[in-house]
Every structure is written in structure tokens, then in C-alpha cells.
Image (cartoon, rainbow, N blue to C red; front, side, top):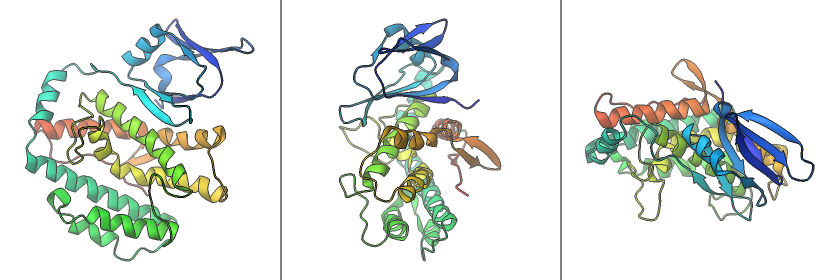
Length: 296
């Protein structure tokens, strides 16, 4: 079942009744009900929103990603379950004891999948990027020769032009990519928690101040899917300098977007769960390959 993403941009009261999230508009008293089991994400943007603890507990129990935005309306924090799997300790142990050769091999697979999807995205847009697809076979264990960085330079210059620099604090339209990547990162963290994995313990990214190193790893092959949606918005409004509510709603559609996993079409949220579940099996030694979707 495709999970819903609920975006809260007005002052409302959110509470629990009969296993449903009740949404009450503060100004008018108008109410709506949404079954908890149908929800994948709740994005709370408005600072005057009130949320009951029983509702947060129910959302957490169903591994619903609850994202809280800051005063600048950017996603800033997330409610994340700490006990979401029946064999949590075993999975943690497997992850903690994963060998360096295994983690390097998994990172190699991740970067290869990312470059394939970058290539596919450009091809769908009719853009030629000489040398990009050939980098897939050049990615070594651990990507010690940084083919990821080389691919990024080719990809962004081909997609946005040679004058564009992809940077969090860079000029527009970088802010569009920033927003959709934050949403994607939160979705990956939710899927990791659902698979019983520690989002802080990465296979490649390592930073003592980063609680989502593994999310930053696993989201890499999914970035081109986010880029595809971001580009639709950028091309529709080339003079865009800020994100309004309707823009954010369009970007949030990423979570319900259909992607191909093997020969099967899946909603992106389900594909993420397949990726993280396969990663847990890799740590356990049951399989050797992470499952990633293909952009086509």
C-alpha cells in the first residue's frame, strides 16, 4: 500500500482518536481524520501546530516519519523509533561487527548504482555525458580512486551547465535540491530504523557530529530520482527564488514516486525498505548485494 505524506502548513491541533490522526484547524474548528496505518510521513512546518503525546506514540509505533521544520521552514529534526525490529540486538551486532572489506564492497556497489542512475537521468533528458557511464566499471572497492567525485563533476555540468556548482550554500536553484535531499535523507533514516539498523553507523561516511552517516551512504543511488523531480520544478519556474507550500508539496511527491527494483515497480518508500533490508542481510552474511532501484 502506498503510504501518504501529510504536510502541515497551517496552525492545527493534531491528536489521536480511534487509531486515527485527527487534524483540527485552529481558526475554523474544521476537522479531518487520517488512519495511522495509511501514513508514511508527517511534515510539520507551521510553528503554531500542537501535537499530542498519544499521537506521537502511535505514529512512532507504526514507524511513521515525523519531520519538524525550523523557523525558516526547512526540515530540521525527525521522530525516529529506537525499537523497531524483533531481533534488534542481533542486527545491531552484525552491523557493528561488519568487516572493513565488506563495507568497502558495499560502498563500491552503492557508487556504481548511483552513477548508473545519474547516467539514466541524463539520458532521459536527452543529454549526452561522455565518459560518465564508463566510470561504473572503474569504481574499485571502497571507491579509493574517487570515481564518485569525477562522476559528480560530469553529471552536474551536463545537467545544469558548466557555470553551476552544486553546493548547499550555493546560488539558486541549489535550495531546491537542498530541500528534496533533506526529505530523502529522512526517508532513508526511517527505512534504516525499520530494518533494525543504526542510522549513525555508516559504511563510508564517518563524522562524530553526524547521526545519519548510514542514511547519507544509502541515499546516494536515490539522489537522481530526487534530481528528476527537482528539475521538473526548476524548469517549470526558472526564476524561482524561494519555495512556497505548493512547491514543497510537489517535491514531497518523491516519497510516492514509482521506481523500478529489478523488474518490479515499487513506490520509492517501499524501495527504500527493500534496500535497507538487503543491507541488513549483507551484514548478516546472507547475501552479498544491496538492492537498489534503477532509474529508467
